[in-house]
Image (cartoon, rainbow, N blue to C red; front, top):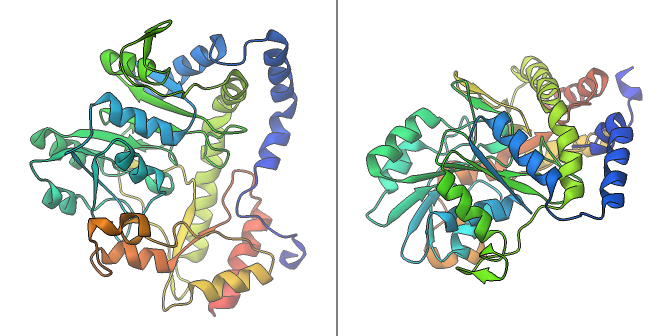
Length: 374
């Protein structure tokens, strides 16, 4: 029976769309007939609902997760001469935004079991020029925010949470995006809360910072044609807001389905030779944007190729650490300097993960892995 399952994608948003297609179509047509396509009541409603969902006072929508990070850095006046500590094992947006405001990215290694920032190394990397830390809740697993916030408070650092892959995740019963000074979210289609195009949002309980974000994202104007500083055009369109409002109502259910799929992967793969399954910290509650294993003994690419032949599609996030990318050669990092990040890039493999993944499909994934790994 397992052998009869069709090819399995690493991610599939078509199935999710089919469950809400009628609602989405109606909502989009209403936006089109309204003639109001940028900002407006739907975007404001989304901001209010996201703020309530995250348990913060303010939410500012923008046009991408990348812009969310850039605007957050700008809101705290981080720029030339400042250093921002972050991870090299993440999507480039996390650090390119640091460079975009003129600050210097400072990379520290990850914890080998969680893929998230090694907080002891964060502490060691702080200098008089350090102004902020960007923890990435990678693959939907929260960073130890209790320890990080204690460190940040002691050193007077801004904490900008990169929540792009973790909408709905919790640390010690608090939603990510509500624990640091500011949270940055992406609505790219593959995210847990994904739109049908680009989109992003920023969460905070600081009303002054929220107001600054609203000015910055709208060309730096506080009132029409009155410009107080150099801003950008980073407005969310109403069609995306309409779709995201529908998806937000389903998000907890979809996240629970991801958690159930992850639990089955844990059970089925925990004793497979050469496979290391991802770890969760005790007080964290992940939402599994990805289920990422490590494949030992140089067999990652062999396993991936064999799975592909069996109709199981996978992904590699990320094949190259940022500290060794050509664009950051000027920072002077050398191979071997951040060993766990480099090792992860050579070993990680993300298995099919989306809420609609059936148990039959998952059985085929596991069966195929076991067959290849012996």
